[in-house]
Amino acid sequence: MTRYGRSPWLDQFPKSRVPSYPRHRGTTPTDVVIVGGGLTGCATAYAFAAAGAKVVLLEAGQIGRGTTAFCSGWISENPAVPFGDLEKAIGLRNARYAWQAWRRAALDFASLLRRLNIKCDLEECGSVTVALTPEQLARLKRDQQSRRAAGVDAPLLNARTIKSEFGLDAMAGLRSKQGATLDPYRACVGLAAAASERGARLFERSPVRKVTFGRKTADVFTAGGSMRVQRVVVATGMPTALFKSLRRHFWFHTTYLALTARVSAKIRQQLGLPRRSAAGAKDGRRASIIRDSADPPHILRWVHDERLLVTGADTEVAPPRLLDKVVVQKTGQLMYELSTLYPDISGIQPEYGWSADYARTAEGLPYIGPHRNFPHHLFAFGDSSHSVTGAYLASRILLRHHFDEMDRADAAFGFHR
Image (cartoon, rainbow, N blue to C red; front, side, top):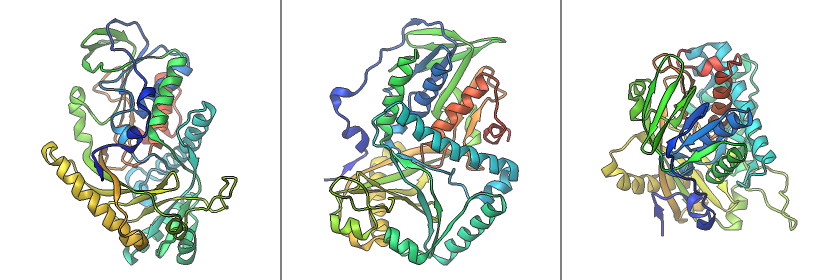
């Protein structure tokens, strides 16, 4: 029976191990308050705490159980914007900086999770963006030419290689060698624990009711208390009601996800999943994320080497009263579209079908940094890449803004780029 509107990452996490943090009460002296306890907020709390800042994190619900728990769990090497489109929007130099920063963040995020020994099913793997139609092939080749002209690596795979490695009938593909998959909820709670060990104070069920600011400081108010701070970091992914004037910068969409039931070993082998030896080692082929060139794109990944997760069918945000019905319809659509890519899986039922909201900017890159209308604030909004790389990237850019140690690439992610 399909579980609609539920996250497999939450369902598979032992209830006895779900972390619990107190509500915020009283006046809490601190340097920095972080609003939002998802992957971006927890990564940022860890980064600030590790740098020696006094940090408080405020989560309106429970740590990691918002958008983070409903994402696909992919650390991507690039921001999922065609390089040529990005170059036209923000210029060659900024586009190159953005791609370099994204790739570095993908590598550093995986490295941090390993260094902190966070058990989140982290598995390194590359990705391939494939063209399934002549129109998609033309777009893919233009993207490759733009990347090469900018000095960005863009190896092209032919149809035979894609069929051999991925069991997919495609015309061509662009390979990205770096990246990883993970369980996003486990990664989030692991980073929250690491931040707490570094001295950050975390509070759940503590929504921010109001923020006021003066010339030198800001005051943050919750239902149970308040705090005067030097910096307010808003890591909620999209503007909340407190910052509704910033909504004009974004378009709001929903992506849909479907996770299949277990795929038999024979079919998995036909689809290009690496076989494992008796000792558990893979046979040399690397399981990759597959992303097509459709608009909106589909993204495919294996979960625990047994189930296929497909993301796509993006729409504008549906009214809440219709969401349950839309999720059921979109899950069926994704399973049908998956079967057109891999006919051998026809008849396999979805175990989960769910949705995730996101905000998108005009250029496709998130906005990370200050906004002139909100003194003492830093924001991380608008990551539409369908990956979690932007969470780590935001944590580093926000930290550099706070300490006024900006990198040359950071301007590519600013509100006034």
